[in-house]
Image (cartoon, rainbow, N blue to C red; front, side):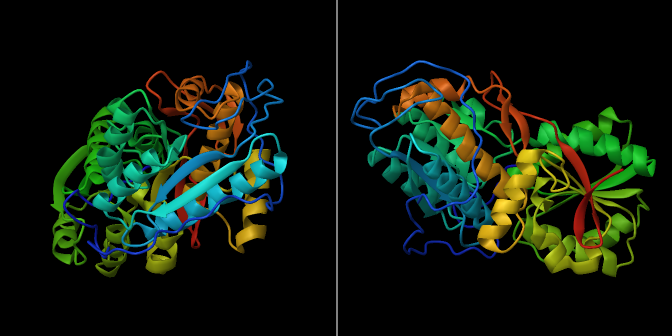
Length: 410
């Protein structure tokens, strides 16, 4: 569920641009509760090279022991317009690292940095992590940033695991770029199919931000899915990711008397669109893309969010035992329940750990090769595979907001 944010020339809506400041950082401690269950599927041993741990490793996947901590760079948007996503991502990856460090054999040294919803800052952080010898980088939060940072890592041959990038084209940047987040093109067709069956959709109005890579990618996926389902798009309306007043566009949309309003945007636009649509008396279902997958939708839009439909990579109602244990551990540590972005970040650390233990190495190339062999890994998202395009494969879920919470659409 990756999302995109600012363009390379500046920050996203309400994000600071050009500001400096110390990025959040910290190393993973061994104080986490519970156990992370990333099982290593490969075996064999490899010596850690100068790009990771400097001493020889020992053991196969299940018993791998590395003498030095594996350096993992983590880049999330902790401030600015994307902070709603990055805050829980940081929690998820830190919880996983704590649990894995307690497990033993392999230790992780996390270097968590704030991209500030600024592509230039994200680029600078990537460069510093590459120079510092980090074995692998998790992030960045936003797809717009990933399109700027990932080519740098690819050129330096440093593996990257995106945990929220859903825009098209991310993994095609190169063979060192992976993601555990389902693409919009994987989730949106399921969302439209389920919504059509539920609401007998025949005609919709589509709205999207045309200056944001994530929102544009979501629009492309919606356009194709609507066509495939034989649903007419009465009108397509565009806006800027920085817009806050959508009443004129929504009035135009209302005039088409659509069966549903389909929106591809980040959360900063999603909240006022949903709120203002309800204020204008638009009672039809609102179908959103991955940018709607945030507790901020219910928190900030209140009862207006009820009836919003959105596809997702995860739902807290899943009966997956690993998901239920993760929710329990996360809530105990942070005092609130996790969202999809926390779950994907937590899973991302499990995927990295599986690769490190499978290769029994902190070497960048060894981790890259092992990531490419990830298959049916048990995680809170379900059994996860990274396919030949280095994209995640696992079941998606279609949700609806009911009584201020995401529930499975039935």
